[in-house]
Image (tube, rainbow, N blue to C red; front, side, top):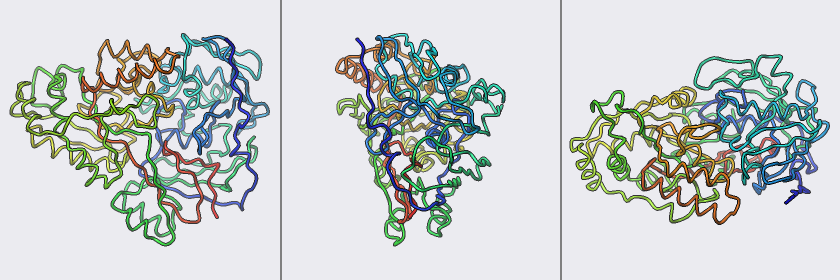
Length: 524
């Protein structure tokens, strides 16, 4: 059956009339983006910043989160496994080259390369074929109910620019090797990369030749990564920056009371959890030799039940956390109350589980956390290490900045690690495929860095990929989430509530994916 999706209201926000005087918008958060190679490292901060410079075929409306065309103008389901995409005409890359179907074929194939970290967004794609300069066909291996949502995170690069600059393959995030696309950018978006000194400063300039129209008035964007919470807030209070993406919970009361500031609050579609190495036969740095305690379900559940998430939500997060028992947030398709139920906090039960597993005296284990990625990430891990100490588990905590933390865990070097997982597709498949599916091709298990593996889970995920009946599909998702709970594949903690601290003269739209939509920012 042929089904045509019409997008009559395409980019209504962007075409809204009106533009105030030109302005610079300065903002800060704790960490820097990892790279400018848009198919290298699937990182939420990076993806949000990249979206101002590189565009995808489809994107979300920042106010409604409805799917909208961007570099596409529409799509047609030609057959259950063939989707025809029509492309926006008269679009230019920043260097002046025309955007066309060759770039789409190149970019989607690039995102499927071995060194790409974006396989989770290309899952199910079999091949991409040029029909004419402004039309491509995407063939899938099976019916794919979330293909257009996957395309929102696959940004378009110019084939000729990439070939000329020896950046045909994405930068490998696991290594320090760089390609030209790591520090340089050539997108079609409303902003051009002007300069980037990693961990120091990033500057974007308005693209005068952009095909769309802006609702906002920002002509220059200056981003400064500031790791220190106190320094970030001081920069906002002094007027050095206009906005802080991640103010610390402790600073919120005075920020809310500041006469020239406002705090925009909202629930994020990101879940914070711990993963555990369930693969290696012996954990490096542990005093347990010849076996891996984390392979034992009783041990994983003991660690889980020893964590008082309510105390963390109240004391460490100061209310900026919604405790959860599952791996997805309520905004994500597939979430259910039944799947969200936690194993109860019970220290005595945890001790008994450890004793039953043969670790009555506890054990030593490596514990890795980022220190500038999630709200109070380091403080959470310190609190949990203290909780685990009460059952005899000595967690040897080490904290690292984002830029070194993520390559480290992707090399499977952590025994217990923290991860926060947002869901750009707003569908549970994105989480299940990345986090609990066994390692495989096209994004399978790409962030399953504890290497949890259960054939029953794999079978469920494969069915979820292809099921087009929404009820049947959501039933399968719930089964997978309940299986993850029973297996303690991970230890869920909470969904983040994200406050943005902003000057009162700034108008901007708070997004559940914690991204700033630069096209909408207005400096009054």
